[in-house]
Amino acid sequence: MFSSLIARLVQALQILPGVGPKTATRIALFLVHKDRTAGQELADALHEAVSNVRECTRCRNVSEEPVCALCANPKRDTSLMCVVETPGDAYAIESSGSFSGRYFVLHGHLSPIDGVGPKDLGLSMLHERVLAESVNELIVATGTSAEGEATAHYIASMFHSENLKVTRIAHGVPAGGELSYTDVNTINHALRGRIPIED
Image (cartoon, rainbow, N blue to C red; front, side, top):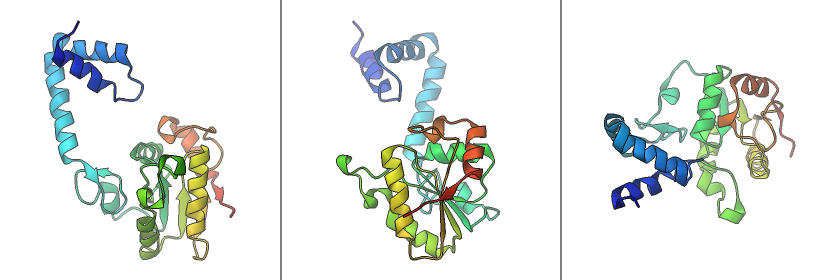
């Protein structure tokens, strides 16, 4: 029914979370027919972002510079570090205004069944950074799924012999929930109610 270019665009849009064939078709037709200017702006912004955004060399968050703005900010509390699964999780916590420390982004969680191990999450880099920067408290803010919990316990075990307080965000985040979809007040409560991780 559609030309090959429209069909390709519809297919490409379906890589977005929650976008199925019908939604992708509506978006594609809007961008190429109803508002071509917006379509071109979106294409330009996407091309520029994909070409220039990479991982921060210190925290692995997304950044246009080798070191992201949060890591480069001298006003951040270097004694606190928060470990999150995704850049979206870091953004959610940052939006809450409850945290003034630094971040480390795992880009996932431990999942042996999917072949995701400690090396894939940069855990050796996390270990080196915590020790080098004299972090006093490591807040583990991974998800509450089984994989998120396993990742939290693994991280806690990494620092078992170190003089470091390792805590876990507590109440407020629903079981199986993701931080990037959690409201600001819930994140506030979760950060204030964090508890030590037991081995």
